[in-house]
Length: 453
Image 1 (cartoon, rainbow, N blue to C red):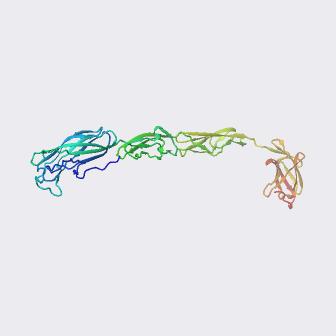
Image 2 (spheres, rainbow, N blue to C red):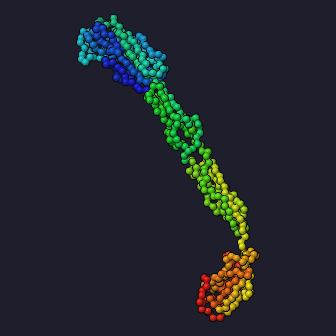
Image 3 (cartoon, rainbow, N blue to C red):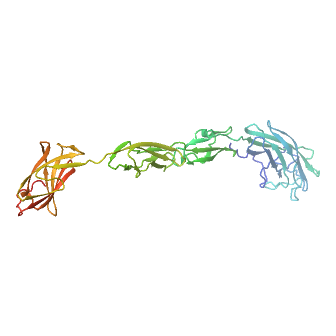
């Protein structure tokens, strides 16, 4: 509520050192020239309903006309009644006075100095009142005073009665009404940011009977502040223009009940191994994201690098946030043991057999005839070759074996060979099937065709 400026008549005189000062009104009968000023108004501004106040009213004597209060005389103002606003009450009023008038005060019949002499020494009248409880503006207490002069003297107007009047005006201000945010009744709220929760204080409002527009409320922590996990006490307040404040407090607990989200979990897959004990797992660890925890912990069991038996192994991956919420996903790895393939060779004439040494004259064309087997089963198709590797140094030769008559055949022209000692190996689909040692005797031949290298 707005405080109105203090309303006073132009002839009001007040003591500068008092918080509230009123001046009584004199009648205008010329027989009593000195006056106690005209009407005065004291404005208390905005006060709380039913509040009690004490107002000091100071009376000021002003020299006027030609009939004066004599030096040494005192003017006393005695409470004579009041008009009270509805539901308001004058509780107590003490007498006020001005005097005794100083020796410098003009004698009867003497003129007043210019500017007019004033005198305010005396006793303030203390008015104690209780404000109405009904909100509103300009509640007015109008107080009446009788005047008496002592000691009696001539020409001082003692036979006349003054009715000094003072109006005490106030506005009854009620505290604003505060409406807490809608979240105040929730108690708990799910976190929505890394580290906690943030959001507007929806529903926060205030109304005030006397203010237009209504005052604006605020809260601490302020709207939009990040509330951490756990309980936070929030205090909201609003103050009206009359200075009255209403506060409200609530506790909002931020919780995290949402598990993280696992990302990048491998799918099921199969693998083979020729190790009868199984294989060592190798896979990438998944990642995770969470709405509140920036670094959820991710782990998988069995971990990558673990040796597992042949068969199906289920790998369980778990992401756990700081609040203990967990998310899980799994994938299967199926390990199949496959025994290694074994190839063998049966050499035909003129080669004696695998591991034997065959000696031939240089430049001889040796017919190579060999039966090839994989895991004991004869193979008459596939990729079969004859590899000639020097026993010491030199370049080797690779010859393709051609199937025919249930075996593999190739003619070995020894004149194409540089060295005199070779290991001759038959292969089928990359598997070594068998070999023999070839030694050549006679002079070195001049190679005219290197063959397939």
